[in-house]
Image (cartoon, rainbow, N blue to C red):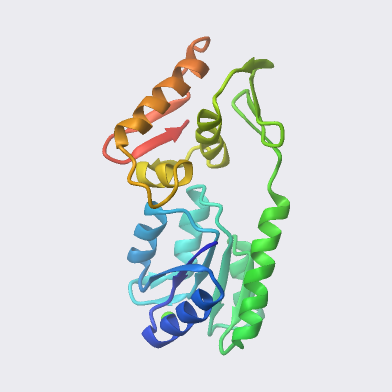
Length: 221
Ligand code: CA
């Protein structure tokens, strides 16, 4: 389970990181809006813990931007702003939970567990987008009702895009999800898989499903 902590107070960030790492979570930290943007482009997270008062902007603007761009990672706001209006605003903008500072670490842990649990429960088993239908339980793919024969890797690749339609996915992020994270993947391999996937999906279509974003990655249109 990977958690991103967006927090500019070094002591608090360190405390959170250490506490969560001790409970076997993989933790990364970002101390500004800019660092948080970069972190989220480079890797996928199961949960983001977000402070609102950041040196180069407001965490709420960051949250709004992520949700607008299709980032669906659960966000737990951790903030000293604790009025009801603040909480409502955060939740309306797409936060999944809101914990006011000061907080007890035990409560934070309980909320983290609850977010991660919920996430695994609500995961749809069938995803549909632009005529593509993926059944995650049976590992079958259909395009406009016709079965598409995909290998396991091709299926996993398509699933990442289907979970993030319209979002530009960095090559590193895709590779990390498809192949073991520490395995240094020959990036050409990803291109090979992408061209196979394209060939299988786009052969009977007049419109492209995927866009290559030079120097960055791919996007399911
Ligand atoms: Ca702060």
